[in-house]
Image (spheres, rainbow, N blue to C red):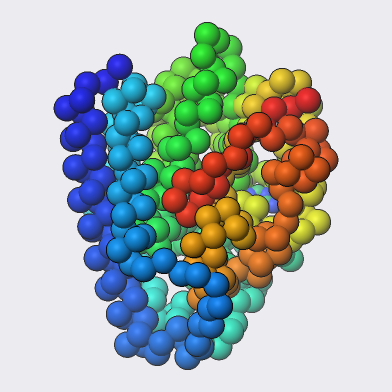
Length: 350
Ligand SMILES: C[S@@+](CC[C@H](N)C(=O)[O-])C[C@H]1O[C@@H](n2cnc3c(N)ncnc32)[C@H](O)[C@@H]1O
């Protein structure tokens, strides 16, 4: 069990981190306004929206839980962001440098440039788009380098802490088992930040990360360099290239809201197939309607600010109910709980 001092040190670090990302959020918002409010479009929200102070209080609650997890020895004080300061500063610089292009795309409602890239060859149509209006969609090394700074800025530095709340159910599953004998698959691992967190919590767990984007896999390889327990592989989550039942644990973070309805079904079936009977599936994605009713207005605004063509369908999709998508695919939901703007669903493979 880590000591109280470490937990306080972590909490202090996280609070500073939130201050930094809240400042970046304000600066990027101001720059977007200067370039033309919301790219010219108006955001119309009919559902309840929290006040800024309530959001900040909720970030602090998340951080307090994160610190308790450190105190309980669930994971060590996390190493976040890029360990190379030069890379990190460059990513922040590029995020600002890229704002005029993404804002111009937003103003024009144009999100199909990614489809013209050479990297889009052979990619599914639903995928080769400029999600968030970001340059390169998910296809280019530049996009992969910026991704984490953009996500942390959007969530005021809480993205890492939201992901970490999924470590507790994994630790409970692993309790009493030898981690060296278990295998974990992280589907759509992106730039590898969740795998990095898992490797800090479970240094001997054998893990595989897959993503459809070679550029994101390359970024994950750079970020996770030296982690010998982690293998990375480019693969479509709709048809995961592994023996059925080869994994004890599967995780999937922030993928489903970017998938069309029918693809979500194929991906779930494909994930379920990789798991052994009794295996664990841990899902993290955006809250859905009514999970935290006072946040519904934020969910309503999100696809108006960012190109997220499948988000509204995601909000309504029945995933974790007893007759929802997970259950349909043989993944029995056992727990579902919010972590700030995310929801975590824990299932067992039947
Ligand atoms: C919002 S990002 C989430 C990345 C990461 N899991 C995280 O925690 O930040 C979505 C990721 O899903 C990947 N993706 C989208 N569709 C996919 C598919 N059909 N198969 C595999 N990966 C996919 C994208 O390339 C991108 O890296």
